[in-house]
Image (cartoon, rainbow, N blue to C red; front, side):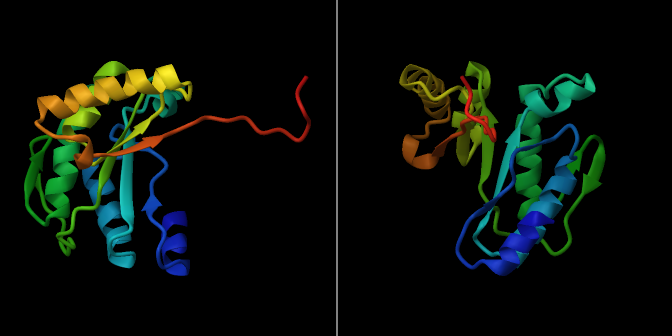
Length: 172
């Protein structure tokens, strides 16, 4: 809802989800929401997805397996093109898909997820810290995935996510 409001009141900013996951949001629902945003703000929609590490652990669930993330990425892209897909044994298709597949980013911290981002994502949101050595290590894993998929850094957008703490009072 906030992304739709931002889309209606802006004309040039990119509009991205603040990292969703495919455990609490089915890939077909995610694709539908992405296509709605793409319809309202053509060329400005971005989907950011993670394994659910920080969001679903509070529910006592385990993060998504990387194979499931990869399958869901493909499902979202196929549905966004207006094509049919079978997911979980059920055929589905989005009616009215724009056929433009907005960029899909993978939020990643660990080596295997960073490598997967290099292989399949349009962008990676690196959540591995901000120290130069941590960023360099994360980029090495992304580069491994890029090589596996015969891609280059030109094929992926690299973003750095940083967690911060804000308070009304200065800490000692």
